[in-house]
Image (cartoon, rainbow over all chains, first blue to last red; front, side, top):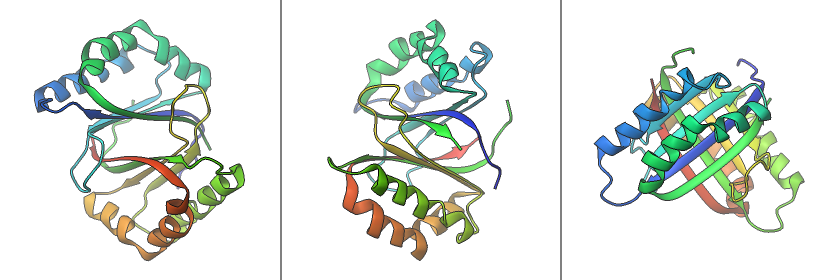
Length: 103
Length: 103
């Protein structure tokens, strides 16, 4: 089992009723552009819930950075803010997040 | 950016008021024994929220498997069930989870 170091951001969303798969795919597509824009991103994974368990949230982002400052640069980066404000916020009914030190 | 494949389980917990750091560490310690017990686990990371943003959940688990069946084997494994029932359930006030295909 590879040992990881760095700082990880994990956020989950539950979408408002009526959110379409297309809208969700648009969120994924816009987010997946960010690694090409924000150099602090070291690993970036997004995905829609696979429907294995009931009651889950709908979508998750897992993003790795060298350290806390790298995450904060991502969090406050204009390109990230734009995706959040334009594509994510209008669709969010539930949100859960944790950021933690990778050991 | 390395391309990932497989199946990822992400779960976050918000603890009940009064949960101690020691109780949280016990959860982490018990969970971190599971990779040595459940062979389907390919990567396993747990962590307490670093306090960077207000309103976050308290704790997260990110676990990777070869595929959906590998995750289900973990989910239903007696050793995992025991940690959930004995150490996690008594402390949980909030829970959010997503499982998704890694691409």
